[in-house]
Image (cartoon, rainbow, N blue to C red):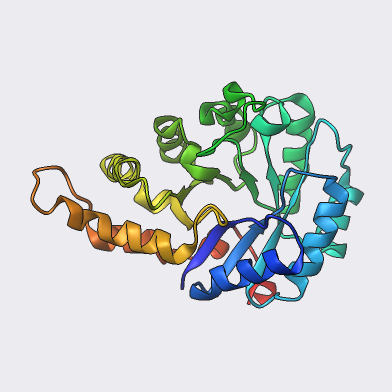
Amino acid sequence: MIIDCHTHLRSLDSTDTAEHLAAVETVDACIVLASCNGPREETNRRLSEYVGRHRDKMVGFAVVDPTQDRLNDRGLAALTEKLGHQGLVVYCAMAGFHPAHCQAMRLYEMVQEAGLPIFFHNGSHALSAQAVLEYAQPYLLDEVARAFPRLKFVIGNMGVPFVEQTLSMVSKHENVFADLTIRPTKLWQTYNIVVAAHERNVMDRLVFGSGFPAANSEECIEALLGFNMLLADTKLPTVPRGSIRSVIERDSLDLLGIRRSTAG
């Protein structure tokens, strides 16, 4: 079982959806995260339509900005029951709000009671100039994890560029996970991230993601399984191939409490 827990669509036109379908052909299922660009209501609706046509393969996460969207229990139910989304994605750095903003904390309380997971897409391999880098720091989520211990959430992109903070978070909190989304061409960065996670003994807290369209799952899997070979003639530390494979084959849907009946 291979789940790509981190994919996006550039848009929802036929060309981009065809590219996405081709990219996820090599995995058993994937999570599609709604974009933070454009009107959120329309984005969530159109993503729902796309995912709904591929329910055996895909799970949709709706985008929410708790400082702008006055989301109540009824609104949350509309996202999940009407549109069929099975989680939320928030972009704190891009939207410019502190992860523990009072309105965000009210949202997390509702989400915890609903038993939904959240994907924090705060860190990134390529944040825009407008993003608030301070709000991308994973340690800011510590308050969230302490206040809502039953809330399952994923720190996207390993919290890059704050990887060490991410490792501290996943080792500290039972329901916090990190998404091992890499850039296959950045082998030294990939090496350092994986070795750091292995040395912290938190490989079991990582889930696999590609970050499509930045990369696809096949490229990422090849890079993760093959980077040890590049070190064969060096004395640098390596990571057991089986440990890396366990991350790639981890059932992140089950880990996040996402129902199998609608995920395929």
